[in-house]
Structure formats: C-alpha cells, structure tokens
Length: 452
Ligand code: UD1
Ligand code: CA
Image 1 (tube, rainbow, N blue to C red):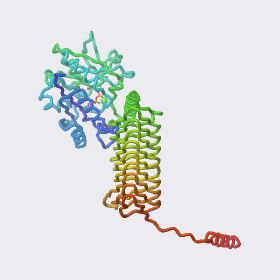
Image 2: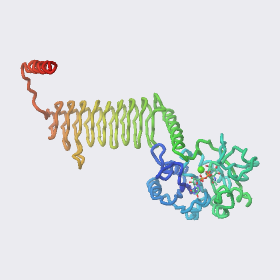
Image 3: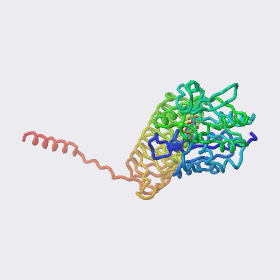
Image 4: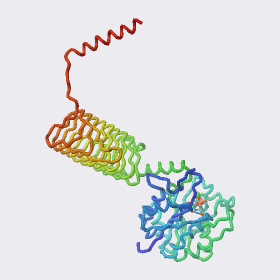
C-alpha cells in the first residue's frame, strides 16, 4: 500500500470494573497484554506509526508500548473527557500527517488485520470517515449506526437515542478510520453538548456529513470487536482467542486429542505433524518442531523442543531449555537453561538445570544437578554417551566426560574423565547373619511391650 497510516490506540480507560491495580489494557490474553495484541494487529495491517493514548500514572503502559514497538509514541490524556478528547491527546502525532488515521481501543484484542485493511481500502476510495459496525444480539449500551442509501448519517449513543433509533441493531464497534486530510478539522469541531457532557468521537460522523464529506460504515464480526471490561470478559476473550489459535494449528497439521485443554501463547510455534495429548500448557516463547510427541499434563515456557522428541507425561520445561532432535524427557522431569543434544534421554524424576548434556547420554531416574549454592548458579556438563546412574547428585560446577559412567547413588563433586567410572558413595558391606539377629531382637522387644 502506498498510503501512509497512523494507528491511534485509546488506552486511557481506568478499567474500574476489572478491580485491579494494573491498567486494564495490560491484562493479558494468551500471555501478552491486550494492548500488545492491538499493536501487533496495527503492524500487520502495515501501520507506519502507532500512537497510544494512556491515562495518568501510565508508566507501566509506556513500558509495554516501548518494548513492543520502539518507534511508537505514548500520549497522556490527563483528564477523561471523552473519546474525541482522548484522540486529540495525540494531536502531535496527527499533526505529523498520514493518509489514513485509524482510531482503535486498547481493550479489543481480537481485532484482525483484515478489518483494518478493509477500513484503509474504504479511505483509499475517498471516504473521509469509516466506522466499523457489527450486528449485536443485544445492542443495549452501544452507539447505533444510522444509515441511509449506503451512507452513514450518524452514530447515536445509547443515552441519546430515541425509541426508534434504539431498535436499530447495527452498532458501533468503536473503531474508526479518518482521512488524514480532514481528521484534525473534524475532531476540533466536536463539542460536549450531550447527555454525558463528553467529547464523543462518534460526533465526527454528523460533522463530516454536514461538510458534504463521504462517510461509510463497514461490517465486521461481533467477536472481533468485543471490548474487555471485567475479568469475566477477559476470560471470554481468552477462550475465543485460544479456540481460534487451536483451529489454525490443527488446520496447519498439528494433532490435538483434546484441543479445548491445550493452552497456547501468542508466540507459540508448533510445526506440522506434532501430536499433543490432552492438558498441555504453552507459556511464552515455546517452539515445537515437526514430529515431536507431547504427552499429557506438560508445562512449557521458553523452550525449544526438537524434531521427533518425546516429551512427558508431566514434563516441565523452563526457560532456556533447548532439546535437540530425538530427545526424551519423561515424567516428573524439570529442565531449565539446558542444552540437551540429539537422542539424549532424561526419562524419570530428574532436575536438570544450567547444564549441557551430550548426545545419546542417559540420565537415570532421580538425578539432580545441584546447580545453586545459595548465591550463584553453576554449570554441569555431561558428555556424549555418558550414563548417569539413578539417584545421583551432580554438584556443579562439574564435568562428566564422554562415555563415562556414574554409579547410582553417587554424589559427584569432582570431574569424571571420559570413559571412567565415577563412584561417590559409601562402600557396601554385608554382615553375615545380622539380619536374623535383628529380627530376633525386635521380636523380643515387641513381646516384652505387649506383656506389660
Ligand atoms: C464507545 C462508543 C460507542 C460504541 C462503543 C463500543 C463513543 C462516544 N462511543 O462507547 O458508540 O458503541 O464504544 O464499545 O465513542 N477512552 C479514553 N479516554 C476518554 C474516554 C474513553 O481513553 O476520555 C477510551 C476508553 O478507555 C475505552 C474507549 O476509549 O477504551 C471507549 O470509551 P468508553 O467510555 O468505554 O466508550 P463507550 O461508552 O463504551
Ligand atoms: Ca466501552
């Protein structure tokens, strides 16, 4: 597209009904703030510039905006005097000029880039204002879109609407496109002579019509325009988001036995031919490569799962986990900040943290890398083909060479050379007949006690 675009996101709402100390737009859907969703949609629709209008005490919002997009600007609306007033808090950004100006809300995370592109097309065809509407099952509370012959005449806020107007079920979704050429003049003409005494952005429609400009309405699915106001609403939007994301993954070739029990993050990448059993949680930054099988009740964050890996059930992968192809991580195994090379197996009841494990190494049940001394983290290195006997503690920093064996139950505090056997435990002693002696002694004690 050759036209330039400024996306302006209103995020100054206090979100009283969330009952939260966190600004509403920072509440998360799919593990990223709602505001980030909206910003990403703007970028996907090829916005050249993003401006966010935040409320007072908005340091947290500023932080999120800058992390999401370093070139985005934040403008503070110090008093909440209405949606048009909020837009004008970003006057500076509007004055810089853009062909298309899109006004969006920070609490509608299900918006799609297609809808923004459709708005931009209507502006490119010569409209001065385009409003996105939807058909509401229950239109109460929404502004009504009053149309005649393909023209949008007015948006009537519920509070101002007549009985007849309230019967209209085509509603304002809240988002609006303005031609950059007319935007400031239209916005500056808005006043606050209405039921709420607010500067309504929606008044721009009648002002533009009075100037003989073209004003259009565009339809989008209701789900895209859902605004989150409560924790309940947040959960509903999360459910819709998850459902769409699962469907996309299945369409791309991922098997899910019970899709409704799989939870994804906005950045989860799962390649085709991955199989997912029920109840799996994908926290942020997880990549699963083709052919991997993930068994039930596993929890991942910040992990790469290699091709044909076999994970779970009940596996926990924490940030910095990098599992190569054909690795196995079984039940009740926790892996953190560790590179596990091809074909290595960590099958049962183990903690691997701050480690590198060589290819085809076998880590026995109950192995613990003792990586933390109470102040610092230390690394454990295990060579290719090494065999760690069950119930061993590897006290880091420590290196186990290629092909080395560790006797089970060892506490290993010194490096073990390649192909050596490391044993770090008391030697076994068998005392002949002593088992029988103990049994006789215990039986006598018991008889004495019951005689009393
Ligand atoms: C608005 C629309 C209504 C539409 C509905 C869709 C107006 C006048 N009305 O009504 O037609 O059907 O959205 O959900 O636009 N905000 C600020 N600063 C302000 C006021 C609002 O940043 O001074 C932000 C809010 O945080 C919110 C958004 O603008 O994200 C909408 O404001 P809100 O007061 O919720 O408008 P509605 O009454 O829902
Ligand atoms: Ca609202």
